Length: 150
Image (cartoon, rainbow, N blue to C red; front, side):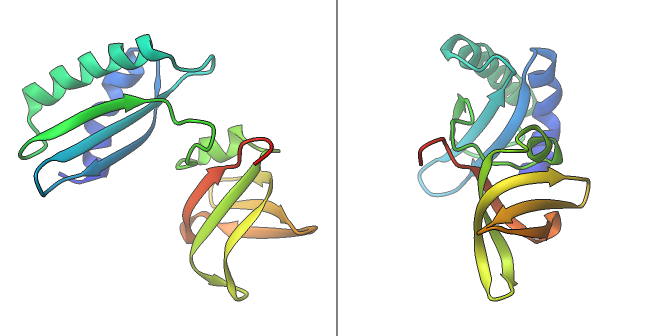
């Protein structure tokens, strides 16, 4: 099962509990694997939230058995330097500073850091070094928020 398929399986349970499935990380193989679920909600996520989601997701994974072999399940908040993985994330954090790495060089560079100006379904506008840059979402490899003061 791919990470996207696993996210599709887990998301309804996470949403039913009142959270957003912000991101999912799956590493399998070796002596053991890891399934890391990142959850969020507007007022933030605490330990009790992570425990609640962990119990529900663990039960679902036990029943559905989509992940082969042994793995550890971790549930946590996305953190201050959260990954932006969905268009809704880019729209929510408009005005914030972001670090972006593109899949391929754009005008000779792959790394951009600047203020996220806007986002639509296909692209984002980032102000980098005083210039506005339009980046296609399909070209973005990773995008993260930059915590204040970092």
